[in-house]
Image 1 (spheres, rainbow, N blue to C red):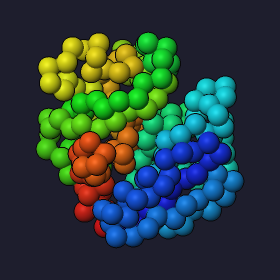
Image 2 (cartoon, rainbow, N blue to C red):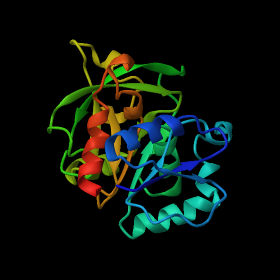
Image 3 (cartoon, rainbow, N blue to C red):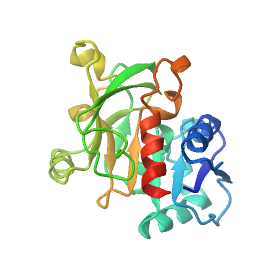
Image 4 (cartoon, helix red, strand yellow):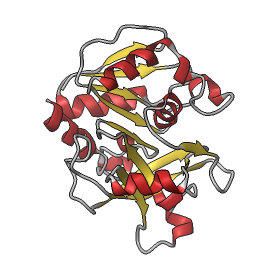
Length: 229
Protein backbone atom coordinates (compact mmCIF):
# COMPACT_ATOMS: atom_id res chain seq x y z
CA UNK A 1 0.00 0.00 0.00
CA UNK A 2 1.32 3.40 -1.01
CA UNK A 3 0.05 6.38 0.93
CA UNK A 4 0.36 10.14 1.31
CA UNK A 5 -0.22 12.35 4.33
CA UNK A 6 -1.38 15.95 3.89
CA UNK A 7 0.41 18.42 6.19
CA UNK A 8 -0.90 21.86 7.18
CA UNK A 9 0.42 24.58 9.47
CA UNK A 10 -0.73 23.28 12.87
CA UNK A 11 -0.87 19.58 11.95
CA UNK A 12 0.58 17.57 14.85
CA UNK A 13 -0.19 13.91 14.21
CA UNK A 14 1.56 13.39 10.88
CA UNK A 15 4.53 11.51 12.35
CA UNK A 16 2.30 9.26 14.45
CA UNK A 17 0.25 8.52 11.36
CA UNK A 18 3.34 7.86 9.24
CA UNK A 19 4.68 5.41 11.80
CA UNK A 20 1.41 3.47 11.89
CA UNK A 21 1.12 3.34 8.10
CA UNK A 22 4.70 2.17 7.64
CA UNK A 23 4.38 -0.45 10.38
CA UNK A 24 1.32 -1.92 8.66
CA UNK A 25 2.35 -1.65 5.02
CA UNK A 26 6.16 -1.67 5.04
CA UNK A 27 6.13 1.54 2.99
CA UNK A 28 6.86 5.00 4.36
CA UNK A 29 4.14 7.46 3.30
CA UNK A 30 4.88 10.61 1.31
CA UNK A 31 4.37 13.90 3.14
CA UNK A 32 2.50 16.43 0.99
CA UNK A 33 2.54 20.13 1.94
CA UNK A 34 -0.81 21.91 1.85
CA UNK A 35 0.33 24.37 -0.83
CA UNK A 36 1.21 21.60 -3.27
CA UNK A 37 -1.25 21.01 -6.09
CA UNK A 38 -0.12 17.62 -7.39
CA UNK A 39 -0.49 14.41 -5.41
CA UNK A 40 1.70 11.35 -5.99
CA UNK A 41 -0.08 8.26 -7.27
CA UNK A 42 -1.08 6.40 -4.11
CA UNK A 43 -3.66 3.97 -2.80
CA UNK A 44 -4.53 6.04 0.27
CA UNK A 45 -4.57 9.72 1.21
CA UNK A 46 -4.62 10.63 4.90
CA UNK A 47 -5.58 13.98 6.42
CA UNK A 48 -4.22 13.73 9.98
CA UNK A 49 -5.08 15.39 13.26
CA UNK A 50 -3.92 18.65 14.75
CA UNK A 51 -5.09 22.24 14.62
CA UNK A 52 -4.74 23.36 11.02
CA UNK A 53 -4.43 27.15 10.87
CA UNK A 54 -4.97 27.22 14.63
CA UNK A 55 -8.65 26.30 14.15
CA UNK A 56 -9.43 29.93 13.34
CA UNK A 57 -12.95 30.59 11.98
CA UNK A 58 -14.06 26.95 12.39
CA UNK A 59 -12.00 23.83 12.88
CA UNK A 60 -10.92 22.73 9.39
CA UNK A 61 -12.61 25.62 7.55
CA UNK A 62 -9.43 27.32 6.34
CA UNK A 63 -7.60 24.08 5.54
CA UNK A 64 -10.51 22.99 3.34
CA UNK A 65 -9.57 25.80 0.93
CA UNK A 66 -5.86 24.92 0.68
CA UNK A 67 -4.67 24.18 -2.87
CA UNK A 68 -3.95 20.51 -2.15
CA UNK A 69 -7.55 19.86 -1.09
CA UNK A 70 -8.73 20.38 -4.66
CA UNK A 71 -6.50 17.48 -5.64
CA UNK A 72 -7.72 15.40 -2.68
CA UNK A 73 -11.35 15.98 -3.64
CA UNK A 74 -10.56 15.10 -7.26
CA UNK A 75 -8.74 11.90 -6.22
CA UNK A 76 -11.62 10.90 -3.94
CA UNK A 77 -14.02 11.42 -6.83
CA UNK A 78 -11.98 8.95 -8.86
CA UNK A 79 -12.13 6.32 -6.11
CA UNK A 80 -8.88 6.82 -4.19
CA UNK A 81 -9.34 5.95 -0.52
CA UNK A 82 -9.22 8.96 1.82
CA UNK A 83 -8.97 8.83 5.62
CA UNK A 84 -9.46 11.89 7.82
CA UNK A 85 -8.74 11.65 11.55
CA UNK A 86 -9.81 14.28 14.10
CA UNK A 87 -8.92 17.61 12.44
CA UNK A 88 -8.76 15.62 9.21
CA UNK A 89 -12.40 14.59 9.75
CA UNK A 90 -13.31 18.24 10.31
CA UNK A 91 -11.51 19.20 7.08
CA UNK A 92 -13.25 16.50 5.02
CA UNK A 93 -16.62 17.69 6.32
CA UNK A 94 -15.74 21.28 5.42
CA UNK A 95 -14.86 20.21 1.85
CA UNK A 96 -18.22 18.48 1.45
CA UNK A 97 -16.66 15.03 1.03
CA UNK A 98 -18.55 13.94 4.15
CA UNK A 99 -21.94 15.12 5.47
CA UNK A 100 -22.68 16.85 8.76
CA UNK A 101 -20.70 19.19 10.98
CA UNK A 102 -18.32 18.93 13.92
CA UNK A 103 -19.43 21.27 16.73
CA UNK A 104 -17.90 22.18 20.07
CA UNK A 105 -17.93 19.34 22.58
CA UNK A 106 -21.10 19.34 24.66
CA UNK A 107 -18.99 19.99 27.76
CA UNK A 108 -17.32 22.99 26.03
CA UNK A 109 -14.03 21.46 27.22
CA UNK A 110 -11.12 19.78 25.46
CA UNK A 111 -11.35 16.01 25.97
CA UNK A 112 -8.28 13.76 25.95
CA UNK A 113 -8.70 10.16 27.11
CA UNK A 114 -9.33 6.62 25.94
CA UNK A 115 -12.81 5.77 24.69
CA UNK A 116 -14.58 2.67 23.48
CA UNK A 117 -15.50 2.39 19.80
CA UNK A 118 -17.94 -0.08 18.33
CA UNK A 119 -17.22 -1.14 14.74
CA UNK A 120 -20.54 -0.50 12.99
CA UNK A 121 -19.52 -1.54 9.47
CA UNK A 122 -16.45 -3.66 8.75
CA UNK A 123 -17.24 -4.26 5.06
CA UNK A 124 -14.91 -1.49 3.88
CA UNK A 125 -11.23 -1.07 3.05
CA UNK A 126 -10.81 0.79 6.35
CA UNK A 127 -12.44 -1.50 8.89
CA UNK A 128 -11.90 -4.96 7.40
CA UNK A 129 -9.33 -5.69 10.10
CA UNK A 130 -12.08 -5.78 12.72
CA UNK A 131 -15.16 -7.87 13.41
CA UNK A 132 -18.57 -6.24 13.03
CA UNK A 133 -19.75 -5.12 16.45
CA UNK A 134 -16.26 -5.39 17.96
CA UNK A 135 -15.47 -2.81 20.63
CA UNK A 136 -11.96 -1.35 20.56
CA UNK A 137 -10.10 1.08 22.85
CA UNK A 138 -8.55 4.18 21.27
CA UNK A 139 -7.84 7.73 22.48
CA UNK A 140 -9.61 10.97 21.59
CA UNK A 141 -8.08 14.45 21.81
CA UNK A 142 -10.37 17.22 20.59
CA UNK A 143 -12.43 20.28 21.44
CA UNK A 144 -14.74 20.22 18.41
CA UNK A 145 -15.78 16.60 17.98
CA UNK A 146 -19.54 16.80 18.51
CA UNK A 147 -20.91 15.26 15.30
CA UNK A 148 -24.14 16.87 14.17
CA UNK A 149 -26.47 16.35 11.22
CA UNK A 150 -30.20 16.76 10.71
CA UNK A 151 -32.43 13.76 11.34
CA UNK A 152 -32.92 13.03 7.64
CA UNK A 153 -29.15 12.87 7.11
CA UNK A 154 -28.67 10.70 10.18
CA UNK A 155 -31.42 8.34 9.05
CA UNK A 156 -29.83 8.14 5.59
CA UNK A 157 -26.40 7.38 7.05
CA UNK A 158 -27.86 4.58 9.14
CA UNK A 159 -30.02 3.25 6.29
CA UNK A 160 -27.04 3.18 3.91
CA UNK A 161 -24.74 1.58 6.52
CA UNK A 162 -22.42 4.59 6.38
CA UNK A 163 -21.70 4.90 10.10
CA UNK A 164 -18.21 3.52 10.55
CA UNK A 165 -17.82 3.73 14.31
CA UNK A 166 -19.90 4.66 17.34
CA UNK A 167 -18.77 5.53 20.84
CA UNK A 168 -19.37 2.54 23.11
CA UNK A 169 -19.02 1.80 26.82
CA UNK A 170 -15.86 0.44 28.34
CA UNK A 171 -16.47 -1.43 31.59
CA UNK A 172 -20.16 -0.50 31.78
CA UNK A 173 -19.80 3.27 31.46
CA UNK A 174 -22.89 5.47 31.23
CA UNK A 175 -23.60 7.28 27.96
CA UNK A 176 -22.59 10.67 29.35
CA UNK A 177 -19.17 9.19 30.00
CA UNK A 178 -18.52 7.00 26.96
CA UNK A 179 -19.75 9.60 24.46
CA UNK A 180 -17.00 12.17 25.02
CA UNK A 181 -18.47 15.05 23.04
CA UNK A 182 -22.25 14.66 22.73
CA UNK A 183 -22.22 13.40 19.14
CA UNK A 184 -25.62 12.59 17.67
CA UNK A 185 -26.47 8.88 17.98
CA UNK A 186 -22.97 8.32 19.45
CA UNK A 187 -21.42 8.65 15.98
CA UNK A 188 -17.60 8.64 15.97
CA UNK A 189 -16.95 8.08 12.26
CA UNK A 190 -18.83 8.23 8.96
CA UNK A 191 -18.33 7.16 5.35
CA UNK A 192 -19.15 8.85 2.07
CA UNK A 193 -21.72 7.25 -0.21
CA UNK A 194 -19.18 4.90 -1.84
CA UNK A 195 -17.51 4.07 1.49
CA UNK A 196 -14.11 5.05 0.06
CA UNK A 197 -13.81 8.11 2.33
CA UNK A 198 -13.83 7.76 6.12
CA UNK A 199 -13.75 10.51 8.71
CA UNK A 200 -13.35 9.67 12.39
CA UNK A 201 -12.60 11.69 15.52
CA UNK A 202 -10.62 9.14 17.61
CA UNK A 203 -6.92 8.54 16.96
CA UNK A 204 -6.17 4.91 15.97
CA UNK A 205 -2.57 5.92 15.17
CA UNK A 206 -2.05 6.50 18.91
CA UNK A 207 -3.13 2.98 19.84
CA UNK A 208 -0.71 0.72 17.98
CA UNK A 209 1.62 -0.29 20.85
CA UNK A 210 1.06 -1.81 24.26
CA UNK A 211 3.02 1.08 25.79
CA UNK A 212 0.27 3.41 24.55
CA UNK A 213 -2.33 1.51 26.56
CA UNK A 214 -3.90 -0.30 23.61
CA UNK A 215 -2.95 -1.89 20.30
CA UNK A 216 -6.54 -1.84 19.03
CA UNK A 217 -5.88 0.96 16.56
CA UNK A 218 -3.46 -1.15 14.56
CA UNK A 219 -6.31 -3.20 13.13
CA UNK A 220 -7.38 -0.20 11.06
CA UNK A 221 -3.97 0.12 9.44
CA UNK A 222 -3.48 -3.62 8.98
CA UNK A 223 -6.91 -3.86 7.39
CA UNK A 224 -6.19 -1.00 4.99
CA UNK A 225 -2.80 -2.46 4.06
CA UNK A 226 -4.38 -5.82 3.27
CA UNK A 227 -7.28 -4.31 1.32
CA UNK A 228 -5.29 -1.70 -0.60
CA UNK A 229 -1.91 -3.39 -0.89
